[in-house]
Length: 51
Length: 508
Image (cartoon, rainbow over all chains, first blue to last red; front, side, top):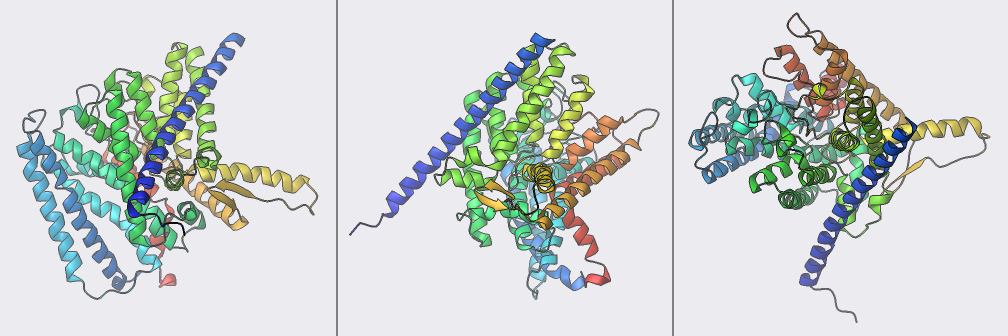
């Protein structure tokens, strides 16, 4: 019979997933920023090439 | 609404006032922490009694309201709506007291303006702006803490209002209920009010801690980091400096850190919870994060192109200014990196107009940001595509009309109609209030079309960017109009109309 998770392991898992969530969110936002600035600078470069 | 109906509203407002009385004690603690606050108009020993007085008054009035009313009927839909509408102006009245009594604000109207701007997480200010070394730079720490705490509490209360009250009030306009119920898609948020409130509060505190850490790592001092985390997370836009984020002299780390905080604040809180419960893909699949990404890219490119070719900024500068202000407007935060904070001195009318559109679009539903909200904008765009499909495909073909938000959701015609109703009322309000602002032009001061529209969109969407119209010398009419904009915009306008209509004999 599998043991039921104890309170401590539940709390630990909660903490790990929360920290993971935060780190991931910040990473994704940074990735968004890179994506935005990257595509914007490419567009600007092309724009200046044309003009 | 009869007089009888007001009993429960007064009782609940009494309870909330007592909570505000507790919150008013926080700045006292901060003031004690900075005993040498001899900057500006008053030291901490002076604001000590201001906050104590305001707290005591709020507690006394709150207790009187709460305990004097014993017999109340059950909370109905119209009570919930009335509470939503009335809470903000009443709470702001007490929150404004310290600004006035400490002498920070020369008259009560400006203190009230500051307080409403705080509660609604707008960030427009008549007393705290003014450029480098002015305004908020001169305030004692306790006052600055109270301004930012106000925004933080405003952010939490608007989340609670939009998620609990408007979800329960099913008869409210369906488009509002829909935005509010975006939150209930996760099973983590249970329908119970207390547990929802607890989950939200914990999440906000956690995010506050994370945001403060990010800002501190970027180079802010601890007090600035905490206060800016409060206002950024609430997408409020107050700052402890008279020239907002421009105070940091284009420090790239701080600019990126503030952008992260703004985006965290304007993300749907149901998405936050989904990510924290392990579903990481949601961030990429969610209809609103995708919309945010696409819109920010489009507006950043547009703004930067204009600045770099027709303006005299170089490419990097154009990109930096365009990106920062587009994010700040789209998340409805309102921080700026323009010295002095008066945008038309630096930007062309075209970019100002683009920012107006960004502000009107706003952030995600069920977040602390304002505006029309991205989910509605996406659905409007999709509905055009659906209309084309319906018209050109054979009538026997049935296609799904759905979007992805945590789960796949389908859209009905009534829902679309409500969205269009909301958006037209929203835009009409923006136009009408900008007309009122324009009407205050006189020989000394003229209010142009684009700056009036910008300012009223800024107040309505709770952004707080300014073209300079909002200042201490502005006519009283303009200030009152902007206050009404902030108030009705924060609670999505329709509850105000419902509240007024509920007095009609037809709905008794």
